[in-house]
Image 1 (cartoon, rainbow, N blue to C red):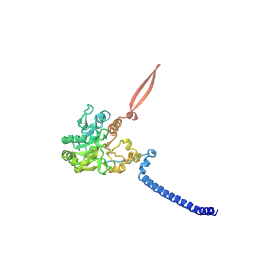
Image 2: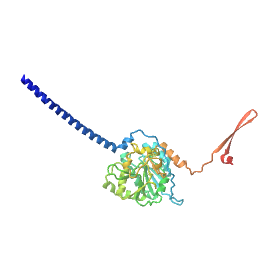
Image 3: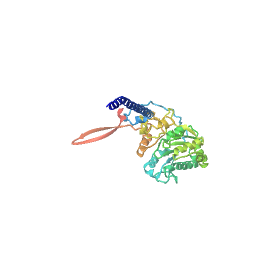
Image 4: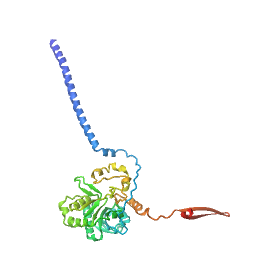
Amino acid sequence: MEGDDALRMRALTTLPWAIRRRHRHRLAAALVLCVVVLCLAHRLLLLAFEYREYIYALLPEPPLPVQRREAHVTNSHRQPSDRQPRILCLIVTSPKYHDTRSSHVAATWARHCTRAVFLSTAGDSRLPDVFITPGAASYQELWGKVTQGFEWAYRNRHDFDWVVKADDDTFLVVENLQAALLRLDPDRELATGVQLRTWDTGSAYFNGGAGYVLSRGAVRRLVEDGLREQRCEENLNLGANEDVNMALCLAHLGVVFLDSRDSLGRQRFHMYPPHELIDPRQANSITHLWLKTQSVFPYKFGYAELSDEAISFHYVDARSMYLLYYLVYVVNPNNQVTPINQVDRESQVKGNKQVKENTRVNLSTSEK
């Protein structure tokens, strides 16, 4: 009995210690868990703050705000006696897009170029001027297609002052491009367009979809030194992106990159169609957030931010191609507008027969 009592007493004295030890372990585990949770929460908050714009972009889109812009009168540098720059338009396409894209380009803005040449691997009667680029059928071979086009431009360089490279879903306002280039010397080695930065190195390049422009001097330097002497291929790590390759090559050859924005700092070469650019909400959309870090100059959306000297738009389908052409070239406020005629309907009853006569009276005459 005494032994049992001793064991019972020993158990009673060790039980609180065991309970306290278990509580300490639980408390330590709870503290560790709290620290882990706090660290994870802190990391999540940092990530949420860093990518907050992408999180906002996933939220429901707010209503389109009312937009206004101040009237801006530009002092045109163009004089009636000025000779307009001669523009060669090199338009990149392929046979599968002749029907849905390039034929509509040929029917609209391409007619305003001094000469428009389509770079394709096959001819087409709907395209008035095609330069066949053999061995450059796929997107991975686009650099070869474009360089073949500039080789052709070099051989005909005395017929043009500037060369613009565009895609078959680009809309170009040629007259605005001519006005922007009017005071520049085409024999200097110059290039311009909308400037972006590459993701890996941060080097500047001109977006190919919006179109980029090379002077006659830049074309000469590109072909003679960059292509024929192979200075670009031997000294640069050229990839599959044609517009990045072109910028790397031109920069390596010492061609000067010009800021293409207007006097108010608004972009004139556009990578998107007007219906996207006109909406200020697009600046925070998930598809356009990358421009905030990769655009050399601020790329803004909204009616008030669009230049009235716009030169190009990209991702323009066939229907929009005609719509833009109609609004830019056909609906012109400076055209002579014929006055609206007033229709005066008089009913005359002669005997049992009612005769209706429509008399068109000129509004200006009736007002007198």
